[in-house]
Length: 451
Image 1 (cartoon, one colour):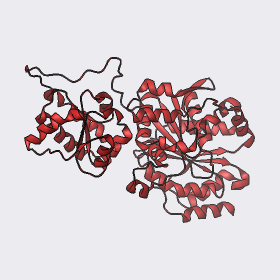
Image 2 (cartoon, rainbow, N blue to C red):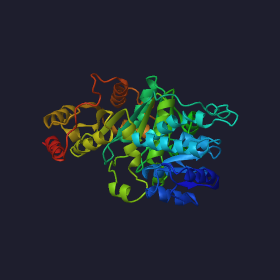
Image 3 (tube, helix red, strand yellow):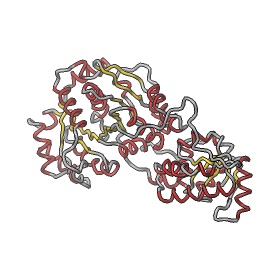
């Protein structure tokens, strides 16, 4: 498939070769190209004019149709190369272009995931020096970086910590905000992102009056292939917390903006955060359904994609549940979905709002006893006591417990949680034992706490 009149000389030449690469469609506009790609008409798409309109989300549609993207040099090729497109040099002839198509298609077959397309482009680019051979016999080297461009990003070194909890307000945002603050106080270069597509509230919890949907802005730059380190730091707001600084990517200003948090863009933002910051805490939504019917039948975005992507990319998942006869069963029932969405992450189970009125005279012992008795895989590692006055005071002040109640038991528990997140797990298997399956266990725990 081809798009743009600048591709016509190469397309005509490829057709005259009568080789394994053939041209199945010359598209008039980008919409036709996307439709042809989604229909599976071709294995590769060569673009020139119209390349400026391509974003990461549109490239994902091309890839979902089983096609790789090649772009002619000079047509916004630098940006598209960062998104995983293969660049066809300006001097390339029909035979050279056909060879690049074959190599790109072959490499994509071995690495069909979206993340693997960047490696495909890198592998194919290594052969472009030979393709760029000039008429006088000289060989052009790899294309130099544009003036002022940032060099290739460093390998991922930071960690992504996802804070998840089931429906019912178990305290995800409270834990996420205070966890990020405690990590900063422990010396970490900490960042905080609000990826909740149902109830974003990090900005409100921190008393931020200028709420500019920082994560959505970062996703927009990522979708355009323009999210580098400086751009990410400009998008994040620096918030002073107890004498330290936490970089905050605020959440959506309206819930109906959730399509802006597309899976591919969120993944790119998280990868950049892991390169730029020491630890990034992400407050994600409760819903983890994959929307399989919507995914298969249409190209519509998924509201749960942001949470699923955060869990997939997380190094540590802090699973938060409320310490009562409803909250704990909900947490248990949701753990299998969390384990499936984050198979490589270390799971840290945290019970929040611990109080005698909801969990018995010895609430911590009661929850531990019920948890151990009915056999869920990961043990409860942390308990956060519920002190409504202390937490309400912090929320009213737009502050964290380290600022308003530094000596409170709740703050001490959250500080232990931060230290536990930073600690390396013992043993080779960081993921722990498999979690339980089914829903009967949740009902048993609820009944046990009510006894």
